Length: 306
Image 1 (cartoon, helix red, strand yellow):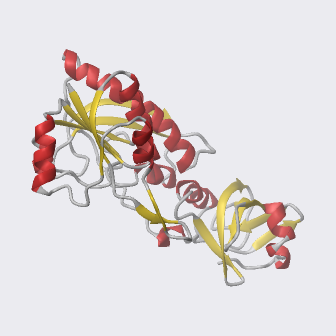
Image 2 (cartoon, helix red, strand yellow; image 1 turned 90 degrees about the vertical axis):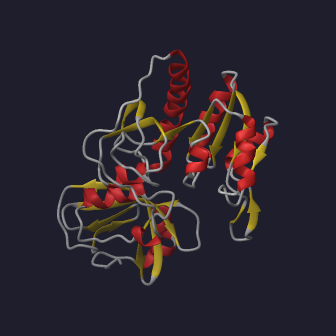
C-alpha cells in the first residue's frame, strides 16, 4: 500500500531514502515551497525536493495544506501511512484523520517537544538524546510513542554532527516502526514523565553573555551552529564563534586574558574560553591563528569583547 511522505530539510532525507530503498510505494512527497536563499536571493528548492526529483517521485509543494483540493487529493491516494519528518508545518485535523500519521521527532519525548529539539539539547548540556516515532495527534508532539532510540551526545558534537547521526538512526527507526505496525508487534504507548519545550531559535539567541560559565557558553556555541551561531562583537564588528574550548582558570567576563599568535582566551563568569574557529563579519570561517593575523591584529590582553 502507498505511503505519503512529508518532509523538507536534509534531516528528512535519510528516512525518505530508507523507505524508498526498502521498497515502500511512495505515492507522493509533500515538501515546503522553494525559498529565496543566499546573497543573490535565488529561488532554492528544499533538499527533500532535490532528492525526490532525482528518483522521479511525485512532488507537491502546497502553500496551504488546509486547502480542500489538497485534502481531497490525499484522500484519493488512500495511503496506508503518512510519514512526517521535519516538514515544518503542523498538519491539520483533516490530514490527521485520513490514516495513521507517523512522525519522527529528534528527541526522547516527552522531552524537547517543538521545533528545535537538537539545538536545545546541546544548549542545555544534555549528555544523551534520541529519536522517537509517534502517532501524530492535534497537539504539539504529544502523540503516543511507537519506538525510541537513545543516542549519546559527544563532547564535540554540534547541531550539524548530532543531526546527521540522529537522522540516520531515525531512518532505521521509521522502517522498523512501519514493519512493527504492520505485523502488530508495536503497541502505541502514551507519553509519560516530565515534558519540556524546544522553541524555534531567534537571531538574538546567539548573543554571547560572557557572565555565564564557560561550559554554558560553549554549549550554546555547539547548539547554535550553523544558525544563528553564537556571536560577540570586537570593536563594533560581529564575530561569530564556531568552535571553542573550555579551560580552567579565571578572568573578568568578556576580557581577553591571553593572546599570542595562535591563541585567544577570554574570561567568563566561571572558567575560561579559548576560541578555536571564528567567522568575522563578512568573511568565511577561519581558525583563530588566521583571524589574529588578520582582522584580529588589534586585539591585546585586556581587550573587552561584546
